[in-house]
Amino acid sequence: MARKSEEERRRDLIAATIREIGASGTLNVTTSQIAKSAGVSPGLAFHYFTDKDTLFLAAMRSILTEYRADVTQALAGTRTPDQRLHAIAQASFGMTSFRREAISAWVNFYALALRSEEARRLLSLYHRRLHSNLVHALRPKIRERAPDVARRIGGLIDGLYLRYALDTRTLRPPEEAVGAVDGSEGAQHVLRAIAAECTEVHENDEISMADADPAPMAPLAGPQE
Image (cartoon, rainbow, N blue to C red):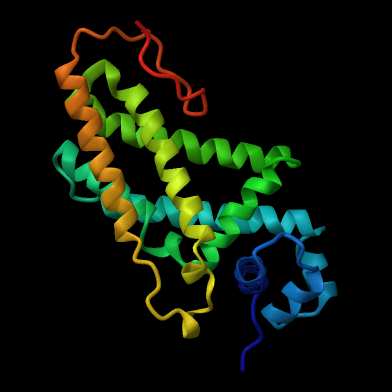
């Protein structure tokens, strides 16, 4: 068998990190556990990644990269705002980024963001990309209200993702996951919420909004009079 390249070993370690965090449901996993899962020595793991947090951040970037690829793939060929919104919802609750281990690992990365500036930056990047995609799809439908609605829909997506992470059916290993939760249910919740928001906007056009787009992580306040 050919010896694996440095890049292949890095990928193995990142995949093992996601598996181990996903299986344990916590960041309290050791580099030795991760290395064993990846089939390498702890020393080699430290050679490629200087410490455990560096490995966690690499895993976080990997999940974000997969999610971005999912969104790009889902959006390819879409022509209408509704098609784009459907693609965003489907990508958020399906495809590569909705594997059981990725769900559990991603929620734990929120905890990492409480103590890691780089993790906070990565989460902010994710939130801004999601917000931008939603605003772009919503703008033709509800004009200046798009940023406000996009902020609430982004919060709903995060909240539903957390619900899935806490569902014991999604946390079981694949061989035990009989009747595992279908992510399409989450996508349908999001699409129904978008439809309700758009209906409310069209029925209340007299409500004025602030001129500036709200930041994706701003408090989810209602429309300003």
